[in-house]
Length: 419
Image 1 (cartoon, helix red, strand yellow):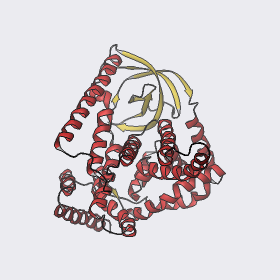
Image 2 (image 1 turned 60 degrees about the horizontal axis):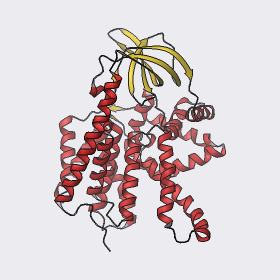
Image 3 (image 1 turned 135 degrees about the vertical axis):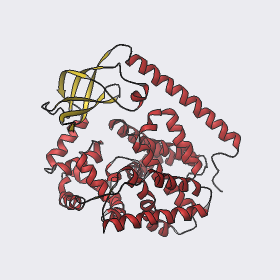
Image 4 (image 1 turned 90 degrees about the vertical axis):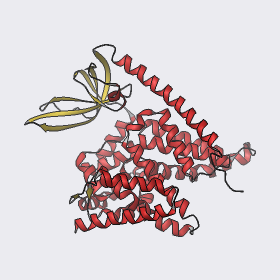
């Protein structure tokens, strides 16, 4: 029996778009009401944790920039004098001025003058885990990598640049790739255990459905523990929608499914419009679906071997436009991505057993490869052509061939620039 398409007629599409429009309008109204409450008075008092602190120099003036997240979930920036001591990993009582905050700034992030009047060390499970990782890994960069992997901690800017030069920054930012690995591991571990109890106590229950529900609850708890990163929210939303559709006989690998899920998530969470991680992870899934749709007749082994190369080549223009870092080692990210599927769950097990530092030497060698980089920023019009060809490829195989040729030309050019 062939899986069903999500939408069978234009009427169904129009009804879905109307429903998303209503949800989006309601979500925006909620955000606007919260914005009005925030800006009702000239100042606002709350608690916030310091996500990031770094020095910046502008017009011969050096000062400290702090990125904060309030207990209400707002993220914003403030500045202090250059002698202001490091407040990273602390919670502070803060009063900030609201008169210059716009609604757009409220939805994205904003700058505000502030006054700190109380501070305390973060006392949370996440901070305890981060401190444990710091003690296990003397090298600060290695510790930062594991903290980014397990607790979605922000990495230092220099380390982010090194990883983007190697083409593996997506591996360290918690996203759908990690969620896919975790969900597969959870399903593999939970299913035999569930089967054991099912045969004895509830033989008529649906094993796959119940196992997925348990795994989804665990993943939801983990996502909330990480403060709901946008890319992880996209992946979790697609995971849930995908399973529901699959359980009811609908096609999963479909552009209809992808676009409907993205649109639904944007309607429910309008701030995702401004989240770079959300769009990068969505584009990654788009190119995976594009590959599986056009090359579904190929063998599973062929797809397994070629897919990493396909995704890498398709995403090169995107990463060049966003980051601009490149080196001759960048194409090796295809190999690192494949190996990461084994490394990620194995590193978790090794940390639980007390052998978490076993890969430190290899990671230090890998980071050394990313110290030399070329800045090759892709122009906006080239990126626009790439996106246009990508969208056109959904409807035309000729456009797909043009897209493949275009991306290969870009990759050849940047490799030549690095030689």
